Length: 436
Image (cartoon, rainbow, N blue to C red; front, side):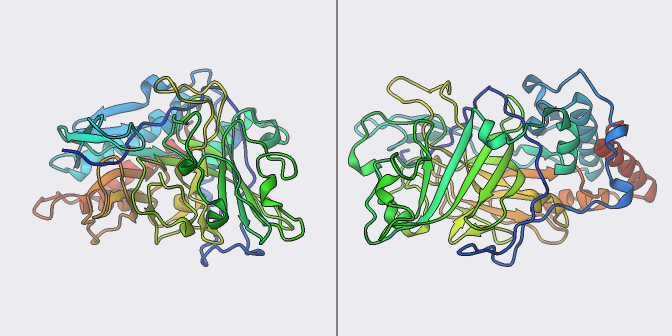
């Protein structure tokens, strides 16, 4: 069977750039819309506040070889804890493991797998791809620490002027073109790990219609003399700068945690912790509307819950932190190409409840996924195929159990959970948040 799409696993840089961020206080500003969904720092009840003094300084740091843990038929992905004290990951997964046991789900949710094939007479990936179905696998559960815990755990890694000092920096520029602007010769964002040398003109999109450019490692931020100079930003008849979106690593080898920064002219800079949940790019799409501001290789994301924007550009699509030493899947590909990641912001940790499903919409195809982000609530079953479960460790025990039961087939019989078991889960949750 032949179709198009990419499900490349991200290829992440290994050099560390740490960042501890100020609370995000995103406000409405010139040419910037947040659809009445301001991104806020999650509030923490007094009993849940994390005391930095009580957190033990551990030399035992959580490593990527321990990231995935099997619990029965379930697979818990603890990658977000890489670089944090190991106790943080262990206590958080103990809470989730016990809840999975108490929910008594008969089996783990399944998702399809696909093997990538070269097209016999077609273009190479990511311009095209063939595929064949594989065996199904359990839907992974991505376990995430709340931003407060990340700031405490990473407090010894703070840098002054961290974004300027970063060696691996992802950058996206938003603009509104002017009548004297011309199109920059820059590649559009591709699946992570890929960049073409000597790309044909088709891979230089009409950025004057896009109003957005994701920069590769070789590109310059220079608005006057670099690759962006054809836009004539802030010159007569030129483009208007709407903002810069930047992203850096928080810990080495951590494929999930990012520090994000939004800079809009004349407005305070805002920063937040972000959580990568998927590669934002796949195989080249056929029909594509550049007015949506996304690459022709973009994997669409639909999020009616929360989707902060600059104009029509979603801030849930982050530029990937790039490194000149970035590994490449095969020969003929360049260094530090433009890539994007789909990433949640801090709003999702504060949601009620903070548990979500990344699902596939009816138009999704292998290696050209199209995602919908759903919140999991009791009594509201999810009908689309689930690609990924996302659980923040600060979720309340009752909410966690109800959400897990909602995912099970309606014919399943679940035992009642008494107050003693809820209290047991609450203690596990409290320990996960303080890790002391």
